[in-house]
Image 1: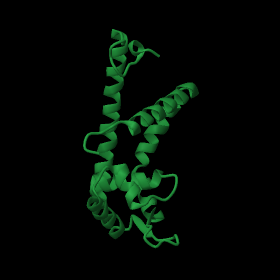
Image 2: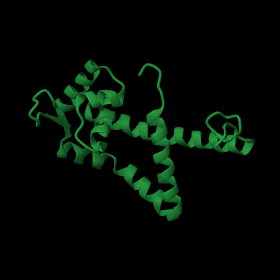
Image 3: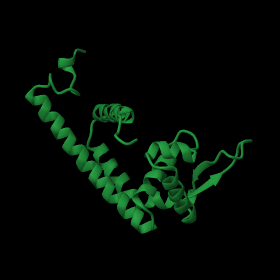
Length: 164
C-alpha cells in the first residue's frame, strides 16, 4: 500500500473516506461513553475507583494470571498506584493475590468468583444490549465487526502514548 492509500496519514483519503472515518470515530466515542457510564456506576456501587474496574477487566480478560507488574504495564500506572488499586480490590473481595510458583516473589492476581458473579449481574443490561444488536445483524456483519474491532485493538495496543 502506498502512502496515498494509507488512511492513517490522511493524505489519500477522499471526502467519503474522511466522512466515514469521522462517523466511525463518533460512534466509537459514543459507545465508549456509554460503557464508561456503566463502569463508573459499577465502581460507585462497589465503592471502587474507575481504574479499579479497568484492572478487574484486565484480570478477567488475561490469557494467563496477571502479575502486578504486567497489570501496571497494561494500565500505564505507577507501581504505587497499582499497589493501592490491588489493595482496594483485595479488601473489597474482588481479587485475591496468590504466590504459586517456586519463586515466592511472583504474585498472580485472580478475580474472585463471587465478585465476578456480582459484576456479571450488574453488567447484564450491557450483555442484553449486545444480544439485541447481534440479533438485528447478519452473521457477515458480526464477523466483519469482530475482525474490525480486533484490528482496532491491535492498532491501539501498539500505539505510542505520551508519558507511558
